[in-house]
Image 1 (cartoon, rainbow, N blue to C red):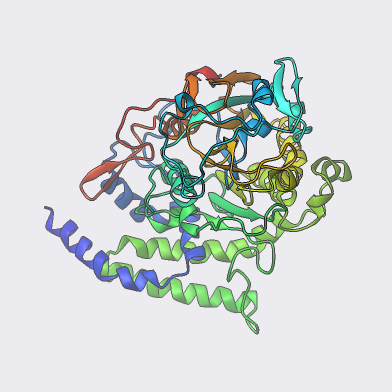
Image 2 (image 1 turned 135 degrees about the vertical axis):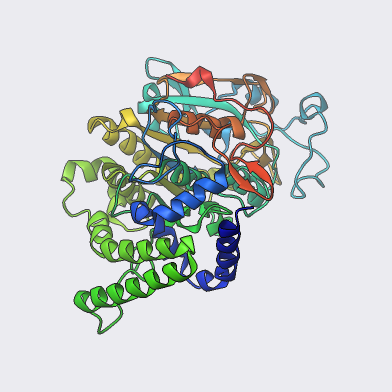
Length: 498
């Protein structure tokens, strides 16, 4: 091993605990001045094993994108909890005649169940109580619970056959967001930040928002590891945008500190960090300088981003009345569009409360009301501004729901357990063929009968739209070339690609 490189590695390990004291929010901002952290980026390239010319001024790896991308940015609308496919997107009229009949063993085929229904003596079929109708030129069936989204079916590609091995929330959400059921891996947004870099010097490459919800109050918890950078450099993790107080933690100056004082302090701190770098050659020192400078600029850029007072009335009306309330899904969707306008690379909105084990007819309509109009508005807004052509929009959860009822069953009241074998995801925008329905499930919306799509295939599709061959985006970790989509063979979903 090169003795100079070995010495730098030792020094880097020695400074690990010193760097760990930096707040998560500011650490994630380090990538936003990647051009000022050139040596840190070069160290990343060394670890990745990538070859080629130096990365561009926006950061990212050399040689990426691997091919001309159809999308430059992406918005992921994540419905945390598992939306019920047969009540929203997967029309199964034959189930009406099977109300309260037992799910055939030939359909279940010994599937592993959660502990919430494994003790039930029977599995009675619960048909959807909601009406479905065909919409658009495609004639896609959509539930009455999604009247606004139904208007954009000709703009979206609906995948009805996504599946996963995970059956409980925490591993399932971690799996689809990071490519592994165990925590500690980089999230999709972190991979995009690492591979493609940032397109805006004044805003994060990866922003996360967690919206309020109207369904069951005891919703599943979500964790910042879902937008964490794992073993990638910390500057690639997502920055959480808050609805109350400072949009980003610790962004405002402390009491008694004005902008001039902050500027002098940063200049002095920068000189100290430069001296430290000259002594120890720790690549993260340059990144630390960059993160402080970025935080200083974000004191202006973030408040401007989150101030929607300049939005025209007809735009606010399109998103619905909830857009005026900070923290709602509608407000988050509008902010996502504003970020896309400012070339934020990846925006993810988590909307909790889709876990309807009971009282589905009471909770599901409220959840749909939260997101339906805003999803329509977001796609329409992007399209009207010419942004949908190079922006990818994804909607979906971590798994689906069972056709059989959990607990008490009536025609008007039922609940559904987790179901990993098939669930819907829709996509729109750059790289996606509009107005298509991909895959088929059986009459029970229980098994895939045509064109299954594993969640690794889904992530490979997202990367493909952004110009990335998922097999070639890797990071050397514990002696392995690790990637988002795992080690088994997976492919982009060609049937929905434009």
